[in-house]
Image (tube, rainbow, N blue to C red; front, side, top):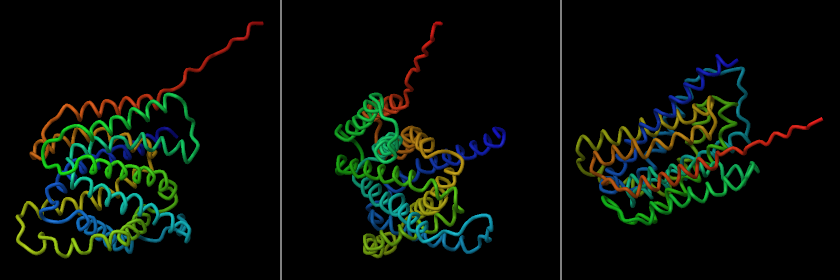
Length: 311
């Protein structure tokens, strides 16, 4: 049993690792695109449109699998709820936050997601709760608050508001991971993405239609590198990364998948600094240490006392 399970786990880990590399470039490319070439709502709509059309077209070519049950109405509604949380709502909040704060902030705040997953598990699933978890959650939130209130450099308009939006986006994404896990086990990942992307498209359409139609990207001549960066965001970050994240849940738990987010501030910051979008600041590593310390405390196992009866 272990020999067959181990390679599958490795596949899951490689999938999530690939998405971390993609997201490291994606956040920075979106920062370049907004708001000069397209507004945040417009960018979200374009991403959700490409995702919805792409996965619905791909789903038409998937052969019927008799071993897998067809989604019932309740299943479809729950998958669409996952799309509203993990794609539509998550992207609207995240991209609007990124538009007014720095990319490194976005990377650091995203690392609080595993802590949010545990906090939600305690609240929703009534998971075990102790003082280590309480202190860990407080430390994680303290790290997020610290990175939000410290001075910023680079292309930043309103870092605090932007950071709050990114934090709420992380809550949406954590809820999505917990909610959608059972459906990745029951149905084909493409089918799950089909219904999730449709719900996301419906949600963001009224928000982003005006910005998408009036975007300078489509009404004036944009440099080649802008089109290449948009292509990266739409194909690699929207279609492939979301699919890999969902598919990885077949092999690893939502909690394990969330833990990989701790690599993002390192890989993402390297790209941000290289592109000149944000300068290095010691505030970000300090905040990251607080969040990781909180994560470590949350996962601290209680010592089991062994009582030996003398007879």
